[in-house]
Image 1 (cartoon, rainbow, N blue to C red):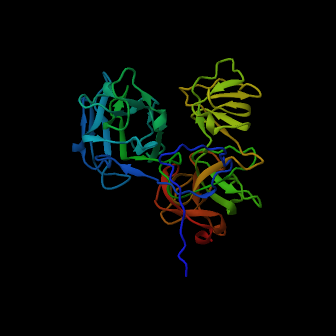
Image 2: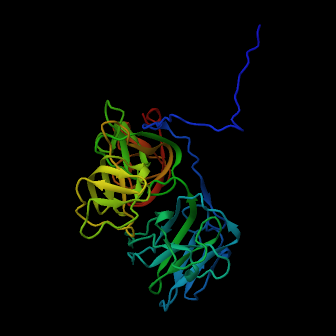
Image 3: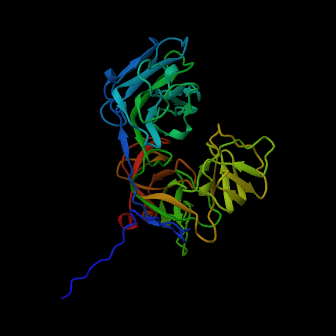
Length: 417
């Protein structure tokens, strides 16, 4: 038997000329080998009040019971009228590298009365410089809780923050997240007696609008003209193998919950008050000619567009017609491709694993979960009722109140049948 030999050529000391290159327009569809990293930073479990400190005597921090995760939660309590902004902060023993993270999130819950928190009452911040840990020394900050009104009783909700949305402090020295010294919360114009519970502060790489996506993520082409974003409930379109928005009433083809549109990119310049057909984006390489969608951060504005040209060098996009509204960088406006006839526009979604959703009614642990709202972020579910087992999408992992965010285990069709 003749032993085969492999002939090789070394280009170590010779120039190499590439005459042809292959560009794959249709990327990999199917299971995605993602590293879905999610980490609770030291002290971020909110189990021990001694991990935290306050720079304002009127804004206290304790860790009593009543947790969402573990045995305790962080309780921020306003004792007396707020004469100035106060900071409650977690100072780490040494800096940690969080440059890998795309999102940070946490559970939050107001008082057990019908109380309203304004959008700017509480800020979350990150600081990257050793020393003064007050809010003024922040590197990045955001008001993540938005307007919060408790229901008849306070309910747990989840705040997912896209780290790219945080404002960078003007003139602050060192805003990179490869050396983070701590995090904190800042109060603004709180009234005496207002409290807010915080639990399980976690940094992660793949989000669903209501927290980390823990499980199998797939990629598949979008149905023509469909736009999807994080948190949307998705279904398989019959016979085509493409992805459509959830329709609730026919959820035998439920696919999963959206974790992102890979063509999404932010605007780098505002669309002016009198819009034009030229816009600038952060990463034009994600876009191409065809149907697109432009949105703002809270989905209050959404318009269909047609891209006629993409300049990837100048990061400039030309539109067939100008948007009818202005979109701003401060509003975290973005543009993404919609589904097309060629199936080149895809969407990523979690198929099997643990995700947070919003309850559309009281649910108990172990109940089957079914869809109760079509499409849309902050996907909602309600318990299954008799005779509708085929519409279940998973199992409720917690007992919770109406409108409360809670975890479900997404299951395959075979497991829910």
